[in-house]
Image 1 (spheres, rainbow, N blue to C red):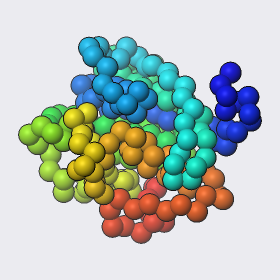
Image 2 (cartoon, rainbow, N blue to C red; image 1 turned 30 degrees about the vertical axis):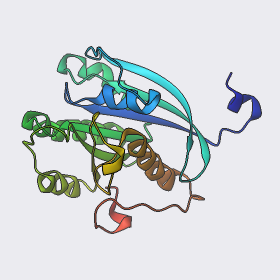
Image 3 (spheres, helix red, strand yellow; image 1 turned 120 degrees about the vertical axis):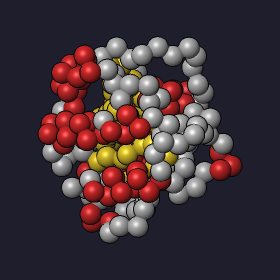
Image 4 (spheres, rainbow, N blue to C red; image 1 turned 90 degrees about the horizontal axis):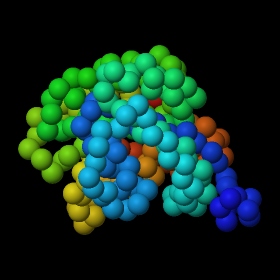
Length: 206
C-alpha cells in the first residue's frame, strides 16, 4: 500500500487508454511520463500492458490513482484490446507525424473507441515524433481533430522542455492536459479550464 493510500489522500481514480497504430511511439512516451526517461530497448506491446500509477495532478493539486492501459497497435490484437476500452475516462490516440499510414488508421481507432465508450471518454489526438521529417502537416491534424471535436497536441521522445508551447508538449504535460479534461468532464467541482486550439469549450467532446 502506498503512503497516499495509507493517509487516505487519493482524490480520484481514472482509467486511461493509450491507442494508435503500431510503431507510433506510444510506449516510449508513456515511459517518459512514468519514469521521466526513455527505456531501451523497446519491443512491440503484445496485446496490452497495465500500469497502475499514483500521481499528483499539478493544475488541481489532487492526488490521482491512474490505471493506464498501453495497447498494441497490431491488428491481430484488436479484438483483445477492445475489451479494455470499456469505462475509460480518458484516451490518448497516437499517430506518427512521419508516417502517413498511421494517420490514415485514425478513423478506425476513433470509431472503435466511440463505439465502446460513447461520450463517456475524454480524448486527445497526439501527433508523435515531431522531431522527424513530417508527412502530416499541423493543419491536416488539426482539421481531423476538429471534425471529431477532439483536441490536438504534438510531442516527441526527444522533446526539449525549453521549446514547449501550446501545441508541442512533453509527456508529463500531455498527461496533465488529458487528466484536466477528464476532471472537467467527470468532476463537477473542478473549475480549471484549458484550451488547445480555438474552438468553443462546450464543443470539446462529441
